Amino acid sequence: MPLPANLVLAELHVHVGSAVDPAVMWSIAHTQGIKLPTKDYWEFVDLITVPGQKVKTFDQYLQLFYMTELIQSSPAAMESSVYAIIGGGYRKNRIGVLELRFNPMKRNREGERDLDHIIAAAARGMERACMEYPVRAGLILCLDKAFSVATNQVIVEKAIAHRNHGVVGVDMAGPETPGFSFREYRDMMRMARDAGLGVTVHAGESGTPEAMQECVETLEPHRVGHGVKAVGRPELLDMVRERGILLEVCPTSNLSTGVIKSPEEMASTLGVLIESGVRFSFNTDGPEMLCRSLREEIDLLIEGGVITVEQAVRCNEWALEHTFVPGARPRQHVQV
Ligand SMILES: [Zn+2]
Image (tube, rainbow, N blue to C red; front, side, top):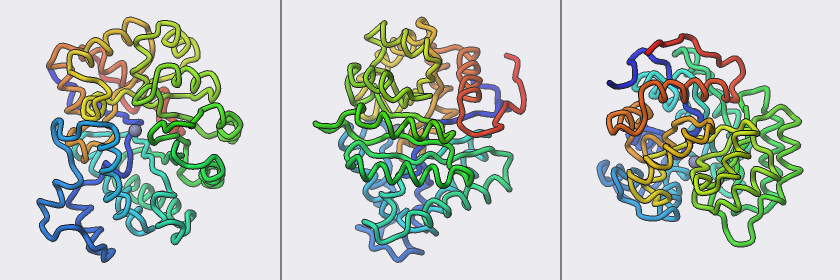
């Protein structure tokens, strides 16, 4: 039995760079006059999507964002992108609570564009879509682990400046490069929390469980993006549960990037999380790039006997409880 069709879903972990329908990206690219590496639409789709297990490593996956972020590097492109994601998510999947994340500095052509215009345009696209569909949405600004601390500080300051205009949180994304340390961001993340922003951090994905533990202890995030590497460390799972941290689990993404090696490993990982009492929610990370929508993601796990419908509904309730979007309470309660 799949998820009830009328269940309104919440999705907390979606990157703008991997969530726009390729047809919309194609149109935006042409409107912006961007010189694409191909004039063939299907070759373009192939460039920005990875159905199945096409990418083999986490780094290869991150490289796909070069093209999508280039296309989205203007205020008009960001407005169209965010507008398209929210409307599409509601029409295709009945997603009624949606958090979208992006790094504004990867959308400003090396400083050529103004960050405030990029962020405000994303908020405009969000507002337009939320006028058309019964969706509550919020924007999360991503810092990048490969950026300097000073550069990331600017992004946090922008998130705080726009917190009453659509921005609801901050995230830290990107690869954990040598020399990177969560510890250096203790004060910055505290500043974001004190300003009323939600804090989520990519950890326990491509990085080690030790780094995830450092992240939890030093940054005190409200949520952790992925966090699946915690399953081998009972003390870390205890810490996550005791601190009331929600893990934003992205099964297809983890399988595509090789962070989790097989569907069997994913099943056992989710089994450990359920057993440990840690709260988690299901997410796509990037539904268009990875060619898997949230509803498909969850239904596949149910069909495979990995989770029950009741567990999936509970995870959706947890997403609604842990969203950074203000006032995003469930609009209906589905009995299953
Ligand atoms: Zn992510």
